[in-house]
Amino acid sequence: MIIVAHDRYFLNKVVTKVVELDNGHATVFLGNYSDYAAKKAMLRNAQLKAWMNQQQEIKHQEQVIARLKSFNREKSIKRAESREKMLDKIDRLEKPTELNSEIHLQLHPRVESGEDVLKVEHLSKAFDSQQLFSDLNFSVKRGEKVAIIGNNGTGKTTILKIINSVIEADAGSFTLGSKVHIGYYDQEHHVLHMEKTLFEEIADDYPTLTNTEIRNTLAAFLFTGDDVFKQIKDLSGGERGRVSLAKLMLSEANFLILDEPTNHLDIVSKEILEHALNQYTGTVLYVSHDRYFINQTASRILDLTGNTLVNYIGNYDYYLEKREELTRIYAPETSVSSVEQSTTAAIASSGKDEWQKRKEEQARERKRQNDLKKTEDQIQKLEARNQEIDDQMCLESVYTDVAKCMELNKEKTENANKLEALYEVWESLM
Ligand SMILES: Nc1ncnc2c1ncn2[C@@H]1O[C@H](COP(=O)(O)OP(=O)(O)OP(=O)(O)O)[C@@H](O)[C@H]1O
Ligand SMILES: [Mg+2]
Image (cartoon, rainbow, N blue to C red; front, side, top):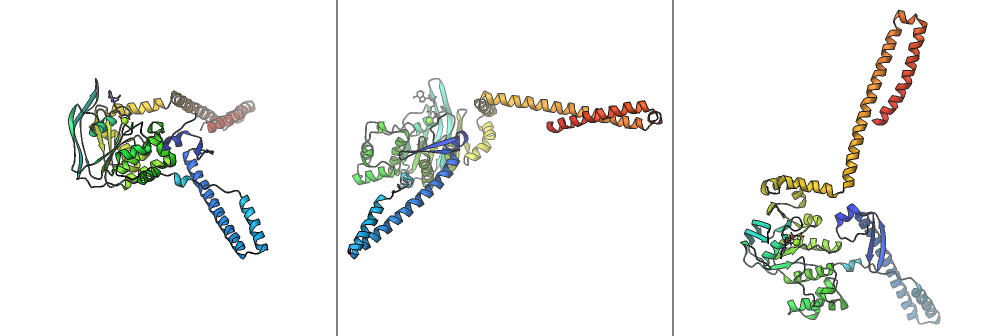
């Protein structure tokens, strides 16, 4: 399999080799993502050190050359020239670029909102005959970082669209608090205009910004030079994500509503977004499937399941711990059976092979237990028979009868050989 992914958990579980594309070079690392990250950090440090040493050496040589030239003697100039030749010949190391490839994202609200940011009451929505959710009630207070999670197609994006007045609810309402100013990052990037260039996308929304300010903003999201004249429609998924983040930053909103903001983002950018959200003093409501990201950033989790929302005050680890218990209480429609189903589904999706293997393993174990029992029985029988023989040999009627004695002795020797073999079998079975 060849996989392109930015999901650290997933890569760690699945891959055995990592091919990194960076700055036009491909580098192969054996192992999973953690192995790659560790080796990469080491390599980068070594490269940086080598580059800095070389820079220092070059600077030193240049100083010596300048000094020799300043003596202005035939001999000194000759020496300077030969040093210059040497300096021209050295293989100049490329500066490791990674440090410059990080986006600069800072999220600050321009004004503080009121204490109550959002109140959703009795919200319902259906598409045709498909009821997504009904009678949803929840509120969000200033400073909260709330993650909405749930399976594909349960209606998470739909909730965010309703709150952003992109579509209407069938019933119920939502209220925004005083001085609430929303910054919306939508999953499908409808807030971007496909025909516009990057530069126009920013300039049209923020007409007071100067050209330099626009260029600086875009540069902070790694769009430099002629990049800024690319059209949105030609950008990759991750690049569109970066433009949306740039607009989010400029909005200086105090209530961020984000629909899968880490989608397509590379790993470094995800970490920067994590950091920016944790520093952000405003309120955040987002949808995500990224377990790692949720765990780093959420203070509360809303699970959309069985047409309703189940509330977990904690991060993703807490959610995992409490899921079964709270689902049974607050979303009885999905309740235990669906939690169980999803577990069964997980087993099923981990492959029939796995299931088959487990069955075979169970059969093997049963056979082993059986064999063990049989062997022990045989050992016991033979040991008991030997004890019997010993007892008989003590009887006068037996030990005076040479023929009988020989017969019993023969049997005992045969038994000893059998026992030897049985014990070996028993040990290996154990
Ligand atoms: N305009 C529409 N007309 C008809 N059905 C729609 C419309 N918009 C969404 N749906 C349906 O509603 C359901 C919920 O969609 P939504 O986009 O809210 O899901 P989601 O929870 O965000 O899923 P995902 O995790 O995949 O992003 C889906 O089955 C979708 O097909
Ligand atoms: Mg969605």
